Image 1 (cartoon, rainbow, N blue to C red):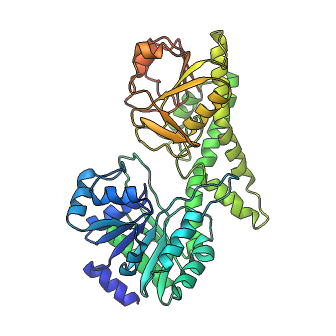
Image 2 (cartoon, rainbow, N blue to C red):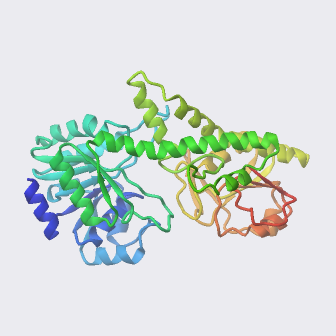
Image 3 (cartoon, rainbow, N blue to C red):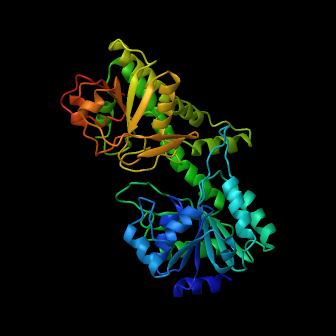
Length: 437
């Protein structure tokens, strides 16, 4: 089986598959096709399938022309019919792994995808999970479902592995294609084949580890590291505010050290699919072993409190203007979870909006990248433009995303109190009405 797969990789007859055509799956499918491998994308959302087949791009990190060309040439197509899994030699599972209402891992998308794939899995295939999850998912959850559903034995009749996605939307340097890849698989042969497949479709280095669990934990470490350091700097920002010290100046000074320090910045809370969620996966799994991740859980509590702290600080700014939170008109500048992207998954700005509303404030938002967003079943329409006269209709403006295309000089000149939670206005000289987190 290994020799047949290696031959298909080398002569580029290996038919690729990607399950889940979102922020991770579509860029991966495009990279596979660009490197000369015919690729089928699978998704349960017919709208995404239709858009891909029409060459219509909906992911910022995918080049529109690349998608159109690959679809037109027949190198890439999409389907919601999982019976076509029988045709593919390799399939990557790139589906969401959110938290449920109790802040516990919701692996239903992974489970459902595995069941759909298992029904059509052919002998000699390779399955790789890319979705971020808790250590043990590949071998404890995925392997039994695939074996039972297909009647095939892992390691003998199909290969199975885990290779964590590393997608940073909006990153101008590192994309799916040139970001180093980590691979862990069930068995040495599987690891060799999976590493060879990724080496053939990506330009970045491929690093192989001894098991799927190591690769799963590695991904959790990446994002928990960031969560803990963001929690540290958020806590320090609260202390520095009480002490009358500018935390942003402190960080700028600290990062002059050429070793032993990496800058992290405070804000209304981390966002995106990974950083706010991954520590919960780890702490949930750790309890199975009677272990409490005390430092990690402390950082989670600090970060989870930041939207509430943001509104508390905003309330004090309003008080100085003899206005209350209840009834105040508040404009949020940005709902994306990071600057210059259209992704608002787990955005702290939405929790800030919710907290303002809970206190009786009337909240609007302006985000040039996100004209409409949905949060907890409600649809929100952002302002289509802002100017001095529009800003003056509000009692407070809050910078919740540091979009570079917003005119912060104009925002300051409007004369409305501004609470800058991202230090986006650091270059603005007229600062009388600006307070920084």
